[in-house]
Length: 153
Image (cartoon, rainbow, N blue to C red; front, side, top):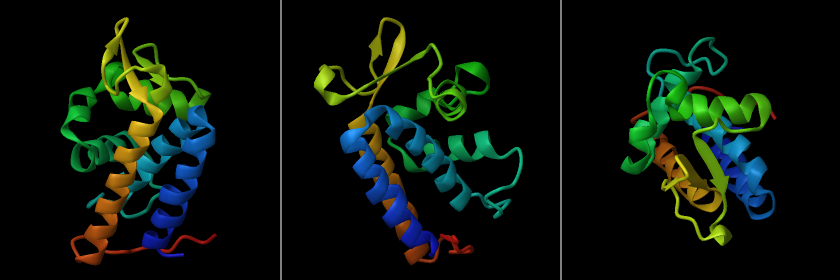
């Protein structure tokens, strides 16, 4: 499976199905997917399994592929979106204390403050992630980044 096929089939379609039925689990998958996208644009190291690149790749993907509203949450240390969202969700399936996860039916708005916690709405987060995935596909198609690896599934 090529990178483009993986992005379309797994990151867009399969995670989209999870968002429809399992909002909480979708955050875990999207966070991993964001790091994958960061690996696609990592100009220094093409090995997706390279050590000590997670925060760099995750933050780069947020800054280069996500709407500007996310950028203020990219910070070094324990207060950034990498530590508060990605690490919490991928290591213990819980966000840090500065993040509140929700869904559209709650009536809350994405990336707003609620009781000193940044609200992230599953459906909106997925839509922004999907656009980031589509941006990577366009970069591959126009030759801006190379499709350098094959996923063995």
